Length: 132
Image 1 (cartoon, rainbow, N blue to C red):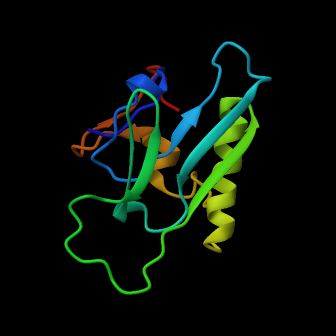
Image 2: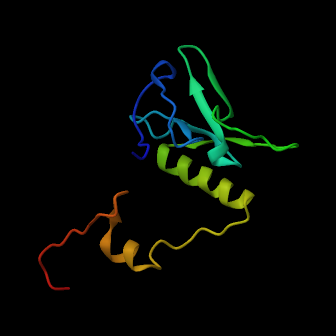
């Protein structure tokens, strides 16, 4: 399953099988408070983040069978106010680092008309019943 945003604490943090998914710390009841995002900046699938009741750690994924000489993995710590702005700014930093433009999500039919899809290939479309 795809990781989702959920409330918790360092004690309840569970690593994902997806590799280096972002750790996001924010206050959902006060959007003026800082949002902090910590994630891989490079080599997203080759690193892993884990935690126990007192520490948070990261490094090369444990089932790696080969690590090339001079391999480097970089990480990013990004902060802003509020969850929406914070996640967008984190995304902008990743795009900028990798010299990628933000794609207009309305340029393709799936995003502009269907709405969203699930990981099993299904999709959802909300219709008001009007023929528009």
